[in-house]
Image 1 (cartoon, rainbow, N blue to C red):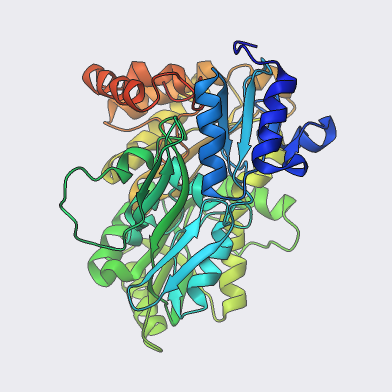
Image 2 (spheres, rainbow, N blue to C red):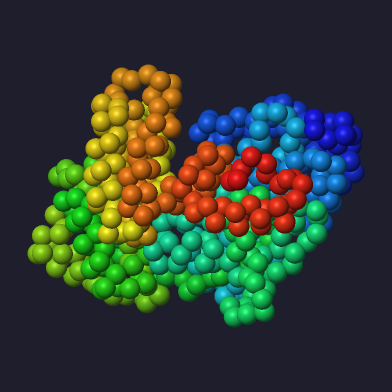
Length: 473
């Protein structure tokens, strides 16, 4: 260990803070905390500590910071860039925030709720629904990902087109700093110009600047009706034209616009129980479109009229409109299962990138070209949030290829795909963060002055490097 204290002494002090039951050391018990969901990272730890209150988090950080210990915060362990996994040295402490799971307040008059970091996204959604509101962050992992993790990665999801990333939904934060001090910024105000808006330092910082323990989140009116359609288009350029029409027609009522390729549909139907192809004929590209409204009627007619006009214009080739909530769920099941089924099919090298929406068709075409030149037989599966320019540019291994040998090409494929993305003014991390996976890329793609400012902020807030070492910077 780098600290003067022995592992036994560290654990004894943590037991004093949270109780013996919540300092985990058994190898079988702590295994889930040490493995990244895709198996890319496996770490080791002195122990896993599970605080229940902000005061306990504060005491843990004060102890760690004062004794040269390192803390890796973890929420639901659903992150995809390794930001929540400790290193293999065994010298770090995993601080699980799952027990900070109180919903402190739901205020429908202010359209806010105050929740702790360990509350799952699904529980936050249900709390909003309980007062006839909507918390619009929506992710495939919503049953297990936590609000603290969503905030620390500035999670995106399928409704960013209408409501923005997590950052746009947070009004205030409670944060424990590296030295144990508690920054209390749990305000409900939408207007507060009293100095720097500090919450934005911590949102998206992946636990490297402070540990978010609670947040005030914004709720919006709950939609009464949905219009959901599975639409076939000729190519991504046609999907962009349809998006332009949709935004002009429906404005913020256009709450979902997800691009999917034919191969993605095939893989979902092949591997996901109960999934079926919504459209009888096969097309190369599809869009899942959703319109939401607080009105009780009129959405279906508006959606049908819009798609009918787009079909007359040659933009839409075919379409199926959900006739019930169950049919809506079946359509979304296809989109949400797309990542999962790629893992079943074999090795999948993933790119979470964003580009200006107008550049998406060209980036997809160029990215496929350079990937196929690098790895003949590779299977491109680009899909995702066309409405905000975020494409999950994934590539499944060639049929019959060795999975390990294919995954070993991860960095090589990253280089050629990211070069295309950067040439078009894009980002190599749209919504998943930097973590450990993309740390080496950050200095290559970020403005040097921005890197200097980021390092200055880190050294000011965490001078001893206590928080999440080896991540982001």
